[in-house]
Figure 1 (cartoon, rainbow, N blue to C red):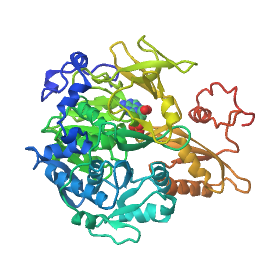
Figure 2: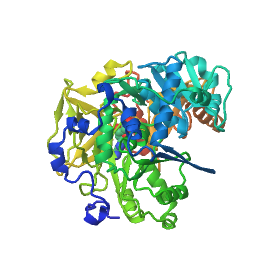
Figure 3: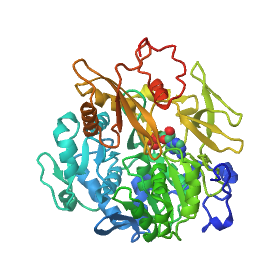
Figure 4: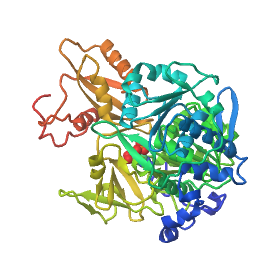
Length: 588
Ligand code: AMP
């Protein structure tokens, strides 16, 4: 395929004048103060994401318009208008108040993409309570680790997830004061030690004065993974709404009449920033599909719902490609006018495939949990170079830098040189801390630069190209997985002496988690033990995080200082040169 060439923008590609017409000109005149003026003035000089996203529209001509169309197999589409969303989130806010839950406390949500997930996120924000949505495919270990790190006071979940993943482990989460349950069959629940959310909602008032929050008040807590230690809780503030708004405008080209579908689950940062907040800010109708990936179903949704803007991820695109273009030919997408992708490198073939099969190319964009919003993107304003992540958005200063021995960084001005991707601090959705980990936070900056941990290069036209991660963190099906969390769960098994985890390249998921383990005395390598360890990891971690492969080693390679050399295991796995092994401990 023509993977190295450019996809030129032509007038016929654009069915609507894009929000970003002239990239260079917009970057020159852009200011965050001007974005702030675009958002409506909130009473009492406050700034609250939920007010901007919901109540502002509920008080306008958009009141009766669907904010969400929630789809599920075998049930009619569930429509939620901006007016209803405002009233329901008011009720949820009042439920929290009635329980004595206040500003600054943390609420966790563990649920599939049910209406209550969206209501709880936005209702909490109205109460000034910080929200952390968790991925429902997490097992009990990742859930408890995150609730404890975040000192969660409230957990909203369903009766079924509670029974499977919380009930037995609740003692491990002492900060939890209230567990609010949603009945998956749509009725009510009566589980000892929990409260039934539907009954509380029914008796709460649907009028509420939002708790005044400022731009610097904590709004969202998203966990991300590092190479070592526990997951990191990235703290985001209400002021992030400026980035959500401007990136929805420039990178996703949201116009008020769009039907928009973000396929990410709100358990991951993309699903919150772009599956909940940004589309509401622009007053569009969002499609939410409660089901898992299914090629035929996805094409049918794009067609039948008349999706005009689609934001998805490389793993999903590769799965569609694998399913074959013939399936797509059964459908037509006349309303689709912009498709974007995020989360992992998007192969040039996938960009072209979009053009051939959907009629328009995928626009890759780049960001991460810490940035809170899209930073670098292929926008409608310029040609696409397939394989590139695009150019920094207005309001974002990016650079390729090299870290110096004294902790400072040097900006690499010359094009096409590999280095670390850095962003100049100060964009509104920049994370404000790693929860309880000031040192870690401090170390991710050098002077005015935030260091992303990604390696990249910038070409002479200012396009950024992803090279790889600077650390051992694994990206599997778009999810960032910390090796330490997986290794710790494996080591809880009595047979395991040591564990090391790497990302093994995979044609669909990008990488899959592969674990190497050495066994304690008294345990023998066997297929039965391997299956038992896979099962153990899956039960503890959940399917999204658990290793797909486990190999036995008599001893793991370590440095003389005792650190497991994951890099060496990876090089051996891939048959690549082993690099510098001078610090390798004598052994295998
Ligand atoms: P997360 O914090 O889970 O959203 O993961 C962020 C990481 O995903 C980034 O630091 C990159 O390593 C990777 N990533 C995100 N978007 C892209 C992209 N467009 N191309 C390549 N890698 C990406």
